[in-house]
Image (cartoon, rainbow, N blue to C red; front, side, top):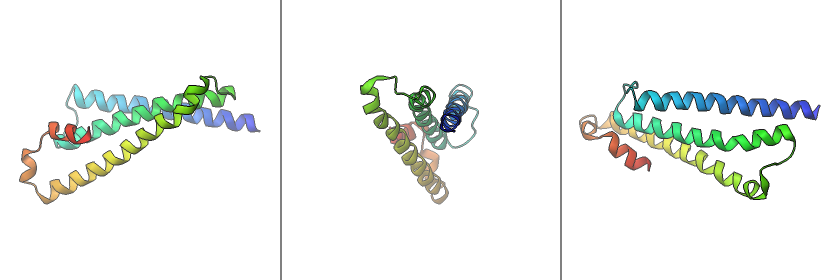
Length: 128
């Protein structure tokens, strides 16, 4: 029964990793190469940074999924100690970027004429 649960959670993690990497890569590729997202440039920059932080989270979930399958940590003691510190900045960055995008949308609605001078470069500096 416990083995079935481990395999379920490992499969769920791999499903999340694959769908996240696929979706976020499509978002980044479409918004950078083809300019496919027709929104204000600042909002598109926030979306790109959120997708990048989601890719960081997805990649950092991979050792956890592998350890669920093997029922052992095979990546050494150093990665065991630092893996929480790899995952948490991605979560924090995602939260802050979503808050920043929400504030940006509010400012776009409140000051529509001032927002005409805002560029994607300003947003990239804000996100950095």
